[in-house]
Amino acid sequence: MKYTSIKEAMSKGKGKVAVRGWIHRERGSNKIKFIVLRDSSQVIQIVFPRDKFEKQWDEIDKLQVEASIIVEGSIKKDKRAPTGYEISASKVEVVGKSDKFPINKDLNEELLGDRRHLWIRSRKMAAIMKIRSTVMQSFRDYFREKGFWEFQGPILILGGAEEGPTLFEVKYFDRKMYLAQTWQLYAEAAMYGLEKIYGIGPTFRAEKSKTSRHLTEFWMAEMEVAWCDLSELIDYAEEMTKYIIKKVLEKHKEELEILERDVKKLIPSTKKKFPRITYDEALKILDKGGMKIKWGKDLRTVEEEKLMEGYDTPVFVTHYPREVMAFYKPKDPKNPRTALCFDMLGPEGNGELIGGSQRDIDIKEMEKALKAKGENLKDYKYYLEISKYGAIPHAGYGLGPERLIKWICGLDNVKDTIGFPRTMTRYYP
Ligand code: 4AD
Ligand code: MG
Image 1 (cartoon, rainbow, N blue to C red):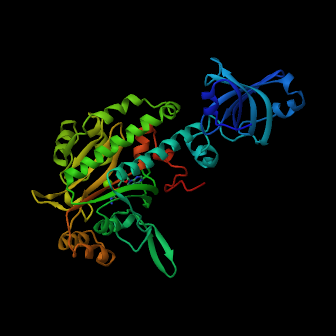
Image 2: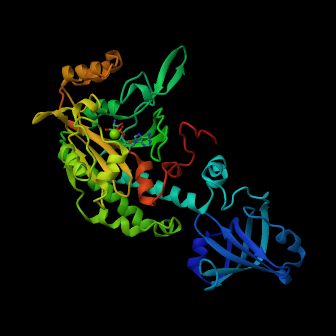
Image 3: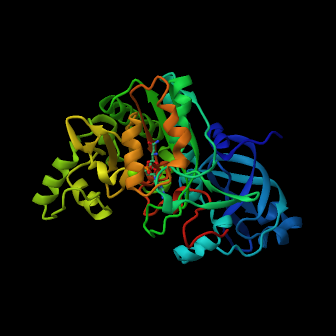
């Protein structure tokens, strides 16, 4: 017989089917055994009446959660079954027995983390991983449809990019190199050949912060575009975010249900325009809410959360103080103390999801900013050279897919959005 996925068997709805998968739940008596079988598509209840399986009964009776089996039988609708269908088995083969599975409802976060290599097969993790896959693909599709090229930058770099202290050092033969913190600087070089590019790549930051939104290894989804100013850049970010959320809502009704996500909370972000406010305006809103921030300070998590209390969609905060921004964010000619940059903050306490800016092409200004930050100009020699040859206004941003997925799935921690998370204290398995 031809095997199908459980989902396909359910859509067939009646007659003979053959499915294979892992035991999700099992219960029974000495007359009948009920197994809920899981594959990557669905779960389904299967019944084994003892009188049909007398010879194999001992084997069936001993089956434990996560054992893998192949089953043939006939499927029919059954309102009492967990997913509305039931297979009455006529044939079974045990493929892989299972020890007592060391995961149950009572495990705390730490233990689930230690057993991630097993927990990853849970329906919850599988639902998140499917959504993650769609988020990554939709990011690519959006930019492909807009005529962008995918471009990969190096992961081993000589130094320099975002902030020195968060670089991970690597032994590179007899010298030191570092793991990339962003694709951006090399992407800007490539932009001069391709004009519109995007990329998704592993990104490393030695972040000591133990927050629910920092990983030390994550995947940044970035874009860089020629002849673009801040407002057009924000248009891309908004349209892209809506595009990704719509795709997830379209394809993942079931997964969002497994995650018990209240999808109504995502709907405003597919329809409403995302507000755009300046840093100065943000300070005023915070001030009204009883939070006084000294002009010139970057917004911290608590402030971002406070600011977002009044919104049900992401918000763009623009024109942050230039001094606290990366060296490549240019001065706003209309207000040189601020930079032509933005952060997109997510609702429901999700904080910064995207960071982006126009790019400075004034070499002297960038040298000044780099020196002020104590950076070594030598690390940026190639980057500064790019602007000597036909520099043009251009802009780009980086999205943290883990943070976007955390929001979309309604999770408490970015650790659950990636297969095997890495933080300062979590590096196994
Ligand atoms: O704001 P960031 O640091 O921007 C850049 O690195 C730019 N060079 C990107 C660009 O313009 N091409 O990081 C971009 C996004 C953040 O908004 C956040 O969503 C995510 O990357 N991010 C992290 N996600 C998880 N763990 C961390 N430690 C992260 N650091 C940044
Ligand atoms: Mg940022």
